[in-house]
Image 1: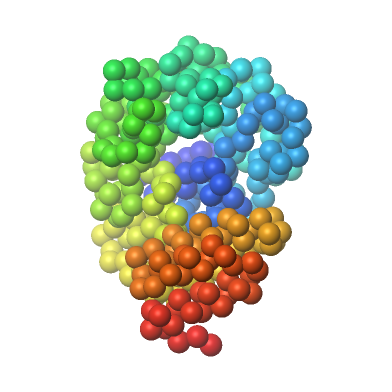
Image 2: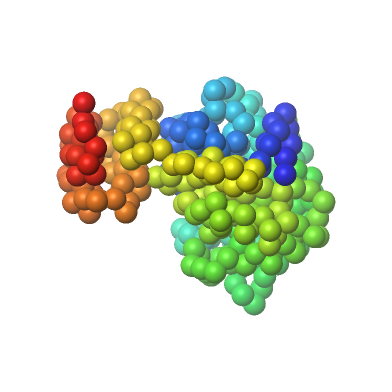
Length: 328
């Protein structure tokens, strides 16, 4: 199941999906340490890079210690996409690949003709991919959905356009734009893409457990998996999937260790973003780590009013005590 992307070889083909507001540098680092073989940045506006927006350029930055890592961009203008690709490839650490988002279903994205709106225009999608490939010094990959809605499923046509115009890999989210994130996942649509093209096909959508991963691999014949929400609060999912593929038993770390990893992630966020912004985002991140545990609801309520990192430490210590864990 190994995949080669540029200079990177992924033995299991396990990738962390790009998620706006989630897959920052801290999240990517933690997931890599917990088994992800490849990560992707939060999506970045090509138009914002065109205007040299400082925050967007920061989002598009990758670091040597997190490779292999791709930068994901979105937009609908081939020339603007090409310019953004050139800038990314010429600044700082060059990413492993450039990924083009043609699958985001959010209204503020599709209303501008970006993201999954491009599924309604496969010809334009092909032009965008061609423009990016023509100037990129690294492989160009594409992420899209099964279609705009149930009546217009065209993932195969999108994949064929990607292959024709030089894409190195495609990732297919097994839902239409209209379905957003609601179940079920259309694995047959992903399988159809795999049968139609010769380039690597990555499956995405509805993977929360190792059993989900094995089922996806079996039903689609895909070359790898891209994990999104399943990794939120559970970066160990990648190692669990590796063990399942190998036929090994996997034992999740105890809650004390899981919280230690969560707090380390938040410390990394503080280093990158400053305490104020990091703590606002940490509330959501910690909520995923404690989900389903004793005292989780009460702890979430306390997290929502925390005003400093030291207070977060006290709250998580209290949570561990409720779970029967001693606190040093």
